[in-house]
Image (tube, rainbow, N blue to C red; front, side, top):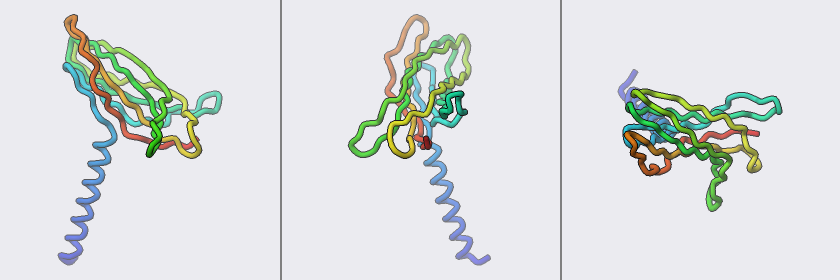
Length: 152
């Protein structure tokens, strides 16, 4: 193999690795506050329910130090482009207690909405507040998961 081919393959591999890293990093944004971190993930297909509708799973992974209770506010959204605001397609609020440090995964199941012609581009965004020792924090800023496209 000549030096020119090796150089081209090395550059190509570097571009692929950089693209993969950026794509992965953009897929989930973590929210951290007062000893807890919550990460929303892009929705995934779960199953088809008895009515024949697609059901999606919205996963949030929570990591907290001990002696904390975290409350997560979730909004499920359908992404629209340009001048249209994103459609709110569902909400949830849930709390989890951490008497000792640990990790918990929360899965919210929701049917695939039908908000437009063509595919639905869905994501979730979350914000958190943390209680510890009788003190409750203010809400964090919102952070979003990556967007995933689903056909109806």
